[in-house]
Length: 143
Image 1 (cartoon, one colour):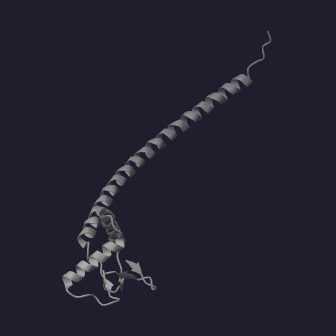
Image 2: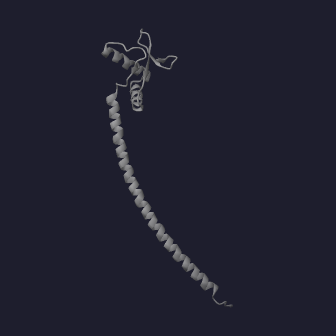
Image 3: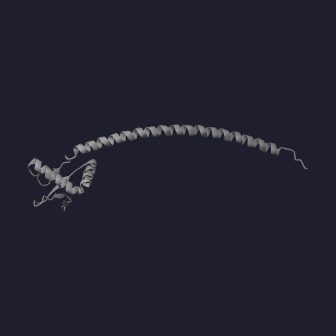
């Protein structure tokens, strides 16, 4: 499959003249198209060409030049991929909620530990000040 001057793909039907067409697919459909082409070891353009031939054979008539080609093929695969993605997203969301809850618990524990350390630090500072005062006000003894 090649592109003409207007960057539109043309179908090469062996000895038939090439016809430009426009192909509009969603991102998911493009991913499925690329995946199927890779699994068959062909380029996506060849897969589209094969699909166009199959569509022509089933419809019995050739589409007019410039007719937009719909993304009718692979709708079931696209729907299955969408469903699978939604399930994975839901599972990911559940995992994220669990991790978020664990993070909140850890943050609360750290806040409690920080407060305990702050109190302990204040007590040590008071003891240090008392020791310093005791040392500073002690009488000087000469031996």
